[in-house]
Length: 124
Figure (cartoon, rainbow, N blue to C red):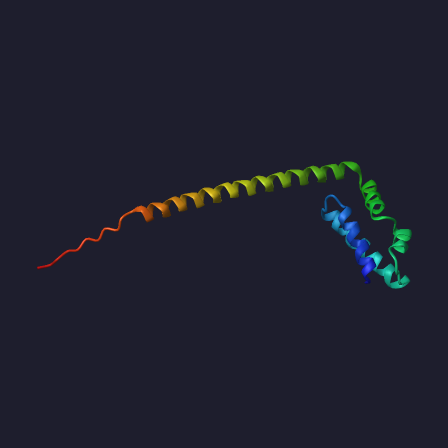
């Protein structure tokens, strides 16, 4: 597969707002079709791919129009909740690790301030 085909496939992948199982399967099948087309026709420019398959925006819009709007909305909402959950988990981990570091630093400072007392027992 040549560089132009790879770039075209990468542009199509970048246009998908959410990549679920169906989207990955579609992209994989489309990639195989594009690779076959590139090998058979020896495509040298992106314009040839645009003429045959369309702009990446058009390809993704066609996929979403075929799959249906409710599915897309559901996937976007789910991804929004997942991103929010991940952000909350990261924030909690950051706060807990900061608290842990502060406690350890205070313990270290307390140990530095303590006097070392050495008790010598003399046995006679």
